[in-house]
Image 1 (cartoon, rainbow over the protein chains, first blue to last red):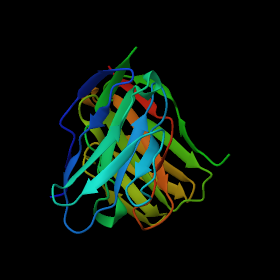
Image 2 (image 1 turned 30 degrees about the vertical axis):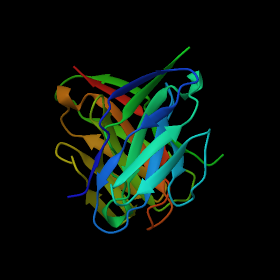
Image 3 (image 1 turned 120 degrees about the vertical axis):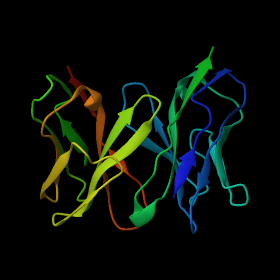
Length: 108
Length: 113
């Protein structure tokens, strides 16, 4: 079965500290992987996808096929990064399977 | 701007009532989805539709039904609402068969008393 695990429900860091949100997946084949973000009172939106290999708002994510991980990283967290983050590997028929999410809280 | 719109945004109802949540999109996407968001459980897929004639059950379809009235409209119904269906419901669209990006509506918060 295809699964995605985000082990931290809540991650709290201070402004300027590095942040890493973990994501592990089990998936047959070569999945396409995404990170979605939900800011307070807003809709979910795409943060980044592994295929594009781009950095959005200072975040990057590297696909490690050996460890089946797709951790999201940012070297210096900002208060505006406080949000709910969801890892989402592509499931069967192109449907996305979402993790349970990690709430990032960046304190001043 | 092309968008995904959900109505109502908030609804409080009683156990046993029938509720319909509506989703419309102006993105011209074929694929539409209904997800449910619960604290600590993330987003779970309820139903999805690849086109007007193709509707599929997701992970948690029991207690729900859907209707794809047109390419642009996808409604979610709770025939007889129960309290554990209290949640935030999201509609989403996607352009085509590849995984691609999902575009979400703003969500419909449903409370079943």
